[in-house]
Image (cartoon, rainbow, N blue to C red; front, side):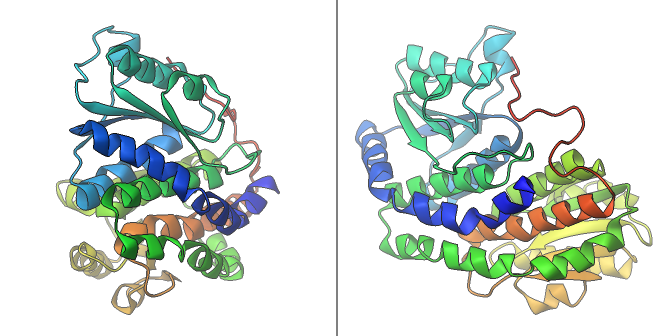
Length: 343
């Protein structure tokens, strides 16, 4: 039951990491002092989805361009890009993947400021980087990452707030543990809802903006735990072709939280509803929930920029209960290990 317990542990992880804001502030001050022009992020798997969150968060709040690394340029082609004036960030739960390590080492060689965001402060990645944010998620025994993913996103959010020096956003961060506890109270509801989808073999997962990351992470958890072919899309990309897949009963999972993107997503949900799609919707807006066959209601009042840290929690529980409903092992998905080392 380690996966289940680790999902429920996340409010406490948030609380523990938020107490380290002063340490993050020191890193932010150094970034500001060096007047870095952009961030260059390297990550794989779940951590890559945390990097997708940074792409929107740092862009919206910090006006900081974000580039997601192609590690093969460093490890196989041996043609790393010029990283002048970049903040080079490696994000890794284990801090052990050679390709992420190669990016950070090259950034250090080029004289860049380097930062490791990891749950393993003694790892090779942490030793290679100039600065480290230990996400302090504690030991994660389940192969499917849950609390380390949300802790990585929280570290990125804390750094954003420190760079922005915005007291209002800092006060919003402090509300995260309470919102997380509230949404995890949906556990019984999700345990009853998930078996409806036990025979599902394929689906699409849709998000946009800040929750583009959530679509990818929910999709990944479905693939690695339930073995369902789950394809993630932004709502915009989905309309550029993949919408043709939809027919009556086709499962579509949507994250549609309040904010700048909501009306665009609501328009798509209405279209999918009219086409007879089987809709699972995570939202804090009744207009979207009312169109869903399986509505998953988030607490009200969560700002859009923090919604990915809350919306993924019921998605994780959905995947956990669906895995059990399909008679699969929640702790040891086939062919997967806790630490994956790619070059």
